[in-house]
Amino acid sequence: ETGVTQTPRHLVMGMTNKKSLKCEQHLGHNAMYWYKQSAKKPLELMFVYNFKEQTENNSVPSRFSPECPNSSHLFLHLHTLQPEDSALYLCASSQEGAVGETQYFGPGTRLLVL
Amino acid sequence: SQKIEQNSEALNIQEGKTATLTCNYTNYSPAYLQWYRQDPGRGPVFLLLIRENEKEKRKERLKVTFDTTLKQSLFHITASQPADSATYLCALVNNAGNMLTFGGGTRLMVKP
Image (cartoon, rainbow over all chains, first blue to last red; front, side, top):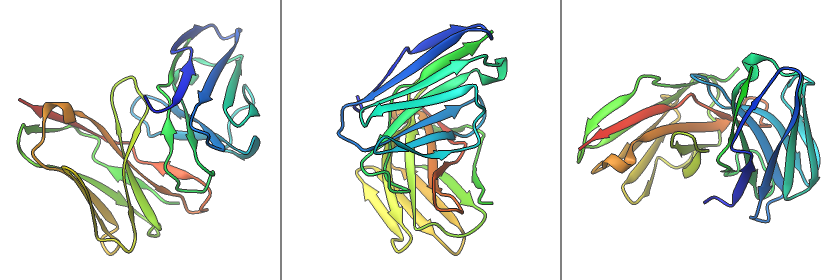
């Protein structure tokens, strides 16, 4: 185990649903990240939070809404998604949020949008 | 912008042989480069980091090289085992220096 947990592990939702993904890290890190991994494509960084403040939004559509209530928890709120949003959503954390720092990933949430 | 190229075709090798995976980048040379392992249905796991002033880095059966002239990193697994079968990703800092960018990964299959 990497010390980063994600729930749920699998999620099926319709395009009109609202759901949330949860990530928790037990490593005492100060930075947390959301990535999207689609089939046959590289990992795509979505959001970065450093000391609970969002520092990067990598041109992500507004139907994805992150929330970071504290340094240990990160949420990704989903609403009115499209089928092309189906992917593995990975959460990661790192010690200080320095660029290029080693990142520790959770197991991911496999999302299917119907 | 920086592009990271990893062989998208799976690499099949026999147990006991050395596996060599390639990571090429197209633009500036990053200060450091990382390698991760990803198993199906799981998140990537950090393996090694190599800095631009390091030509080679080793960890147990793993060896990474970094050639800034060729703009290439090689990842070697010696005495490969079936348990080494996974997808291996390289990652480096992007042009703007504000995020880690991952390659598409190469799938390694080690046959007994």
